[in-house]
Length: 100
Image (cartoon, rainbow, N blue to C red; front, side, top):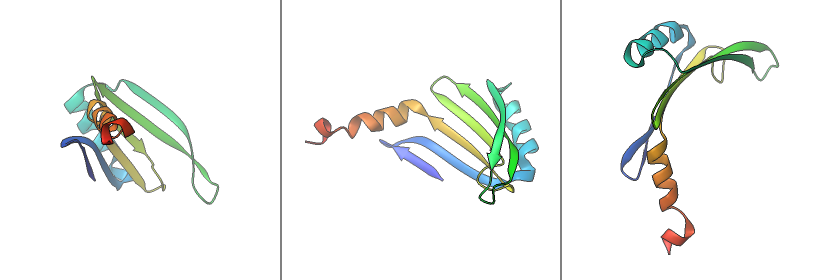
């Protein structure tokens, strides 16, 4: 999914099969270099079972790319791109004082 804020691309969310996580991470390392953050945490599904979840993040100035594996289900992973400056500009435009 692509999200625009104030006419500027602000957020991209992509979901794919969790088995692709290694290949996707390698591609992101090739593109952006070493991750700036890496963590493993417990991920609990609706049935109550717990699995390890990998979070890998690249911070690129006011932009970031985050890989979560698994995400929402044990067979799905997500990659999210955020442009915080575009999101902040859009939020500032929606304040009540700006609307009147």
